[in-house]
Every structure is written in structure tokens, then in C-alpha cells.
Image (cartoon, rainbow, N blue to C red; front, side):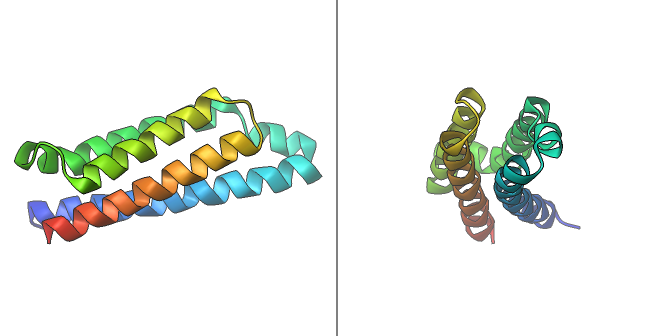
Length: 121
């Protein structure tokens, strides 16, 4: 498997993880509303920190070669905005502001990985 194919696979995996992040946030709202015990386990801050660590790690690996080739690409700029919003979601209280920041950030990050994949191909 070529280096480009591996990086494209990483970008696709990151897009999938961004989608899972959005599903997690939406399901959390339902769980909190309907099942408070399960909701508290599901929304444990550790899950969010682990997810953020994974997002930063994958972004670093996937965007690293792009950054080495170009100082700042549009995809990287969009990805950094997405990571910023996801990090902001860790800092605000649980509720709609957290959900909005996290889902918007994860969506931007997914778009950035798609842009990165297309730029590489």
C-alpha cells in the first residue's frame, strides 16, 4: 500500500470518527433526557478527552505531510478551526453550547480531511 493510500485511509477513518462524534453528541441528548443514569456514563468527560486526543492524533498524522509540503493549506485551516471548536466543546458546560461546538467542530474536521484527501489524489 502506498504512502498516499495510507494517508487517504487515515483521512477516511477520521471522517468516520467525526460522524461517530456527531452521533455520540446527539445520542447523549436523548440518553440524558430519557435515561439519566446511562446518560451520565455516556457523557463522562473522559470520553470527550479521549475523543479529542484521537482527533488531534489522526489530524496530525493525516495533515503532517500536507503541512510539510505547504505551509498552510485550506484543508488544514478548516481542520484547525474544527479542532478549536471541538476543544471549545470540552470547556463549556454540558448542554446545547457543548453540542453545537462539538458537532460543528467535528463536521469541519471531517470536511478538512475530505479536502486533504482530494488535494493528495
